[in-house]
Structures are given as C-alpha cells and as structure tokens.
Image (tube, rainbow, N blue to C red; front, side, top):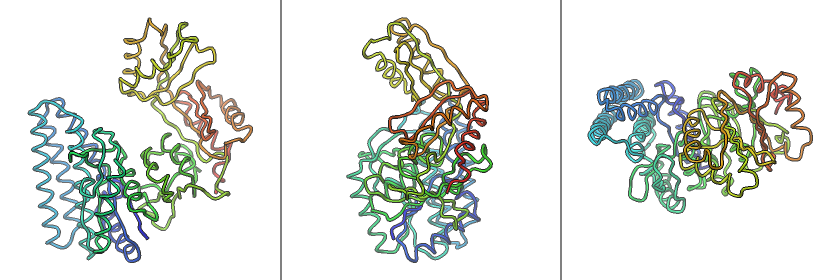
Length: 467
C-alpha cells in the first residue's frame, strides 16, 4: 500500500517519542511505500511567531535569544535521539547552518525595518525544515534509508498568497509524483515538511496554521495513496471535548462532510481545507494517536457505513467570540445592503463565522472572533454608520455551540430537543442558524453557559452510547 503518515508537533517532541516513531515507520515500511509528513516540533512555531513580533518592535536581542532557544531545543533532541556518530555529526552541522541562516534573516528583517507576508513565510518555514532533518536522521539511525525534503523540494507549487497559499494542483501533481515515485523505487523513505510550499518563482509560501494536515492530503492525492493517517496526541475525533464532557466517546467513522464541519467548529487537529484534495479521489483518512498505535482512531471516508449514521455525531464549542447586531431602517428592502456590510468586513480581513438576518430585514447579526471584534466594529463605524447603518450593538464573551451529523438531515424534532434541553438547563440562546444542508445546527450562548450547553446536548442525544 501507499501510505502517507502525518505527525503533529506533540508527537515528535521528545527523544523517546521520535525513536518509537522511527521503529513504527521501520515496521510499516516492510510491506508499504511510505511518505512521512511532519509539523514543526512543539513550541517552535510559537517561538518563530514571537521572533516576528520582536522584529516588529525592533527588539533584535529578544529575537536572537528566541532563535538560540530553538537551536538549543533541536540540538539537545539530536544528541539524545541519534546514536550513530556520523549521522549525528552531519545533523548537528545542518542545524548550525540553519541557525546561521535564521540569524541572518533576523538581521535583514531588522535592518529593513519591515515584516512582510513573504518574509514571515520564510521565517515560519524554519520549524518544519528543522523537524524533517531530525526525523529523517532518526530513521537512518536505525538502518532504514530516508531523505528529508521541504515542501518546495518535494514539488508543492502554490499561488503567491503568502500566509494562506493554495496549491496549484496540476503542476504539483506532476512534480510530487515524479519525485516520490523515484524514491519508492530506491526504497528510500521521504520525510516531508508540512505547512510549506513554494510559488512559481520559488519563494517559500505557507498554508496557514495547522497546514501540515493539508500538505499530507495534497501529497496523498498526488501519489494516489491508499490511505492517509493523521497522527497526533489524540485518539481521533470525539463526540465532544473530553475536557468538558467526561464520558465523550471516540467516533469510529465519519464522512468527509461531517469532518469538514467538525474542523470548522473547533476540532483543533484538522486544517479546514485538509479534505479538499481527497474529495475527488475518495482516499480514506484515519485520525489516530501516535502514542496509542493499536487504536484505529477515526476513519474519515466518502460514504460511511449505515450504522455510523447517527442523528447527531458530535457537539463542539467555539469560545472567545463576539456578537455584532447591525440595525438601520434604510436596510429594509434595499438591495445590496448585506453585500456592502460583508465586503467592508472582507476588505478589513475580518472573518465572519455566523450570520443571521430577521425577515423584516431591519437587522443583521454576525459573530466574529474576539481578536477581530475591534477591527470589525471600527470598520463598520467608519465606513457605514450614518449611511446604511443606524446603530451597532456589541455583545462580548459569547460562544458558538454546534451540533454536527448527517443524520440530522430530514429528521423531525432535532431543534425541539436541542432548545428543550437549553430551557431545562436555564441557558439563554442569543442567536440560531442552520444551513439548508441540515448537516449542522449552530447557536450562540454566553461563554459561562457554554460548558453546560455542551454537556446538556451530549446527554440529550445520548452521545456517550455512540458506536
């Protein structure tokens, strides 16, 4: 079989874990052609983001201290993980070269006094560049041939939208399949850096936070993989966040569309665009734990078996959001009002998570993340207040509760059960939306009520008895 295994940062953050993964890869490679995709080691991306913030404040000393911290972390791991002196020496030498390159980049960015999206992508790519060297060396150390490849080297070509790039799939498919097929013939295991590609000019681009999942499915689609495994520190997708619901259960099987909804509503381990490359090829994916390899995890497939079609599969919560109520008499029956509001917010780079409009058209309510709230309100006040908007009302400290499950489609009484359970638990609902697909039902409550709401719905739909 052709297998793509993607490892998250928490899976490769200790010497013991890296050695275990190398052994697991060695065993799997006896009967399968493998491609390994790696995220940056835990905390590395956060440190790189902090470096960019230090550069913006022209604090070169702090940026260099953080770079040194990253360098030390990787050098320590290399010394503890790689036993063969020649492989270890070469790895440490590569790390020294990367560290010099990182310092030179910091120097250049401070000198120019500007942080552009293009220079940020180059900076953020260091995490994956370092991790693939380490994982590949660990595989070589136990006697299996392996080679590290960046997204650019494996052949992922993207547009030039730095920070949120998209792959140019036709070109990528040709380059990736050519590179990897030749390595399969030589029985060499490629370890590819996730999250990163390069545009047609060879400039480094990234897919945005959590983009390593996306890299894995892009590669899987290019080589027509039999399966893709997303390996992280969780057993798979759950019926709810186990930190909120003690008896949350692992979901054995979900459809692509359900998984996409779960990704949008807080299943943290999946990048929302991850499933795009899989839809046409119908490649099954398993979300599994790298610490519990005997557990099959969650199977994500185009057509789940009938016994996996529960009415509601999971309930999730997105906290730290705010609600903006936009009112104005001149909004009623005026074509293009909503378009003006949303294009104004789009230009300011505000992502609207939920929308509700009353039938009289006199008000539109939107939900945005707390981080976007100030920007959204300022933009609407400057551009539209006194023109088409008469009044803006802001409610902070809100949370979105979302129920997801393809079995809700056409099922009578789902909403009455949901809002009946909210009434029983004295939770006030501020806003409700349901798409025409009936795949998810979402509503907004005050943040302090979010955990109560999640537990109430989990209990109401008996999600602890799923599977």
